[in-house]
Amino acid sequence: MNYGEVVNRFLTRYKLILGVKEDVKIKIRRYKTKTAFVDLRSKIIYMNRDLLDLGEDVIEYLLLHELLHIKLREKHHTSQFYAILHFFIPEEKANEIKEKIIKKLIEINRNNKR
Image 1: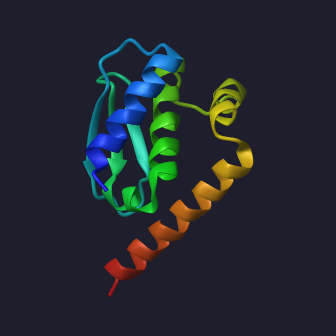
Image 2: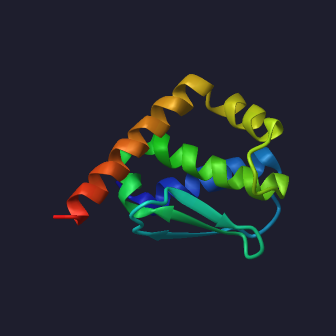
């Protein structure tokens, strides 16, 4: 899978849908415990490289999640944040994705301790 193409496709799509006008940059790196996070000042979204192997649904979830922080200019998870997130990714599906992510992070950390 070409991560760059998939990430850019979702970035373009959700920026348009959410009306995010800012120039958002993506940096993909390996992290032991982080999934993805955003620097609200620089508008850089950092994504965990090891999680991108889990599939397009995970990439979409992580990217949408971080873009919502930019859109709402809010680092916390408010009821509005979850309402928008679950409009695009239903809560049950989001929970399945989070479970896949947690399992992968546990695996990464087990392998790093050996």
